Length: 124
Image (tube, rainbow, N blue to C red; front, side):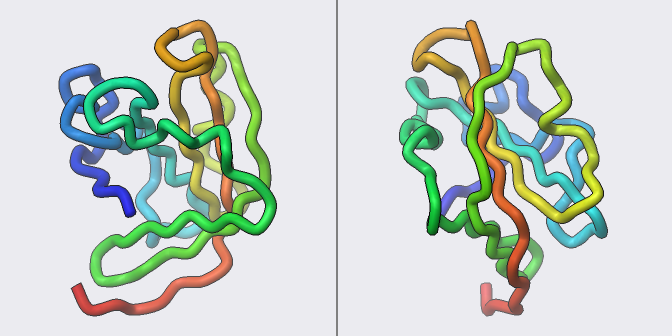
């Protein structure tokens, strides 16, 4: 699992500490959310190093405020780094993970999306 250490921060300094929730992203327990998280593939913790390997049958788990949010991978794609559409608020509950592509460059952004399938209470 990943610890999203910095809420509302995707600056270089913040992401050196771990994955960051985009500044205007929603949190998992809000309705019709797009929980958008950015992390590195090649620096610091390399949290999203293998993000390109997500595919059918894979799950993405987020833990937040005593609950576990289980998402089912739905798609991955690459966008221009100035394309903010993937992290905008959506009509469905999803998680959007973003990172650099190709590894070690800022030429594009790799996007992986999962759709919410279950929420359960957990003991933290």
